[in-house]
Image (cartoon, rainbow, N blue to C red):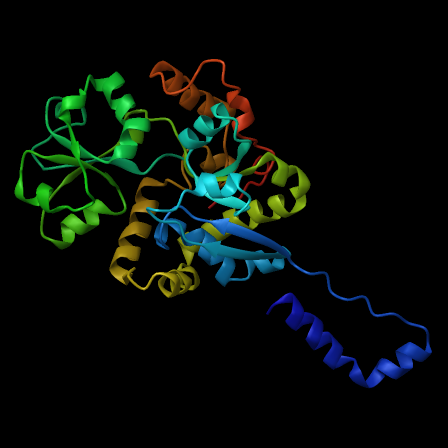
Length: 334
């Protein structure tokens, strides 16, 4: 029920007594309008956004006094650009992108992180024993890899640029060439391979020390300072939504499929199973400090990695890229 519906119901309930109230000099205070938040995700609706849709579907945002408009991202959508331009209030982003934006003078600030680690990794054929063993093999990666995880792989394992082939988000080359490996998300590419009867191994970068959080919530410093109560309410309702989604995902899934009918039940179930198995939302520091938690230590690790690979200048004011004020003390434990 919307705020306007609530106000209407109340007016209907007291209609018979209105004259008496006016005669007595009483005044009816109108219901306060919900705060509108334009929230942009980083891809088409999927289980990786389940907690947001759960918070919307179950009324958590509404109960928090918010009218959250969830807008889908996609390959042609530049979330940070839309945020900086005032066309979105809060977006789903990535620590590396936030730090890079700070260096470029964009006043972005992370306010919480749904996943305690990145879900990216390398999908390989079953003969590959480890991530390190991929040195010298052809690995298909997207163009964005060169400004995110590829420098980390080069630094940690000595990978070279001539190993990198172009990943076009089509798995056919991987299926037909047993020597190939490729980038992927633990919740996505392995599912597609499994559907096509191809056995794989998946090496999660985070298991080998890749430091960023993921599904990071980001706003601008001005929006945060001018709407601190709404931001706090949004973060709290969102993290509760994620807790609820992992336990009873049906409401969120219904909205996901309404927004993106291409999302099948089997894909959604696979993704949720992966979330639970690797504890990306509920593990790490979130196990004791609550879903969404971020720490100075982790942000510094990402900053140090970026500086060490010449992705970020050492003088960049990295601590301005995030705040823990909205997640510290929430203690939403799954």
